[in-house]
Length: 438
Image 1 (spheres, helix red, strand yellow):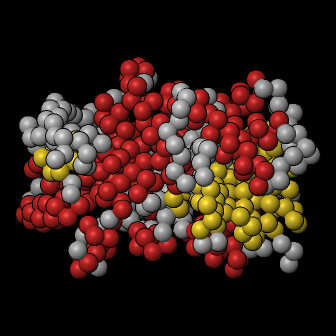
Image 2 (cartoon, rainbow, N blue to C red; image 1 turned 90 degrees about the vertical axis):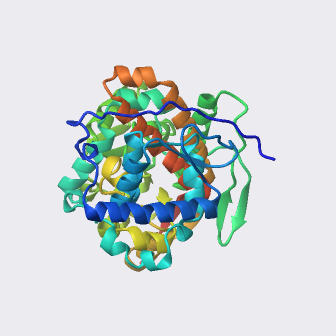
Image 3 (tube, one colour; image 1 turned 30 degrees about the vertical axis):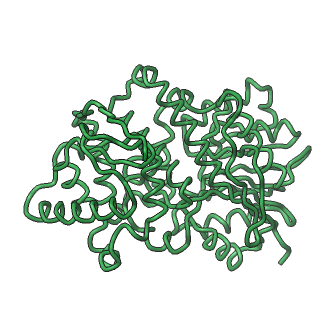
């Protein structure tokens, strides 16, 4: 028999600041909203039964071994989910209409069974019900700057609170067994770190960066272009190898701190950092490296992105790409959807599939895949550590001026992504390309 306990989380009824969170101010109302709520209720209960998810109220006992949804305001939850699907699901969490003792486990269960959640006949009607992403989120040169600023210019101090000292905001690569699978390699799930989590994460971030630099052939005298600076750690490690690095970003906050870090390391003569769109870069480089930036490119510009890399690489040059990916069929089905992540975290974002990347590079460039490592389980562990560290830093986050709704949003974002990687719904790849002679 499973051990059960009553988890009496005090109802976290959030009263969002309506100037900061205007879309949380009103509940959906009217006949259509009520009908949608009834439909959502039926689907929700059927899914919970089928997937063994506990659907309970705060005073009911919970089995800690099973994922759970704890309803603090069932009416609000159903109205929001019924009217706005997964956006409503996330917004109902922001207002405290529901809670879960382990959001990552809940999302992992849903992600592993995504094709079974909604009946097939309803999936065929998704275009009628699911909102399309606003045109203002298109990744034009001006639009990309705005989209990137929305997330990355929040506050350098905020990111410093939960990232490790390298300030790497991308999947780390922990020690683990690597196996061959269908033409590429897979880094299996890492063991929980035996040492301090921050120390383990720092080492794993260095391992990730060093592997990318090795794959790109970066060494003394290499001319390196980095597309997407982050806070400068990859540029620093490339320059320490004797390379000359040009790195471009669209985040003013990242630019300023990355320049400070480069200057402090005494490497300003080897690293130049510019506020510049990748489409405007000129020159010739022996190596191009880009870490989790392609997710912000947008599918309408993927061809532009890869053709630009091809144009910038010297003959025989190498391109090392780290990309978050999703299955091709799922990407095609959802690429125009307006999701909670796109609304609140990454406007204009879209995860490519490995198939889409390989098709575009094969058809439109001289870039050819030389190596691919899948490491999604490592992102789940990276996110777990980030979420744990962020939660522990709650007082410091509040001191920066972020409110309780933001805290819930950020926790939901990190745990939601952790569940996606743990379930295999999303993955992350290190892909190496070599520029062949035409």
